[in-house]
Length: 168
Image (cartoon, rainbow, N blue to C red; front, top):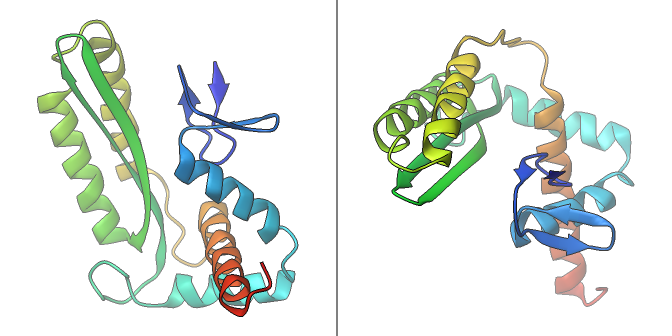
């Protein structure tokens, strides 16, 4: 099975190709291209932006940080149709935990009803949320996932500026 070139999720079928890379969807494909651009950014600018986001206010609740990336996992199923997802989001630990608990409860209720994937993937998604809830969290050190997200945000801003000035 292939993995998404951006979010590293497993791609069972479909996806989007860009050259030799494969992505979950168009959004991951665009983000993957932004990652390539972001690798050319000045490391000191990236560090400064990551520190600012990490120590800033939570974009979800407005509360004080530290802020980092937390991922919640969901699955829902209906007979032969099953859909599962992972959604990383920049937020404070409290907001991240709330999202993981909601994902866990949603999956526990809505995940089991599909054959065969609902029965197979539901315990995986529940376990991933539980693992995220109890994962060691370093409030003093931003994660690599946060750095990657901030890099993409910076590259996206550069692309927007270039498009608005006609440099694209």
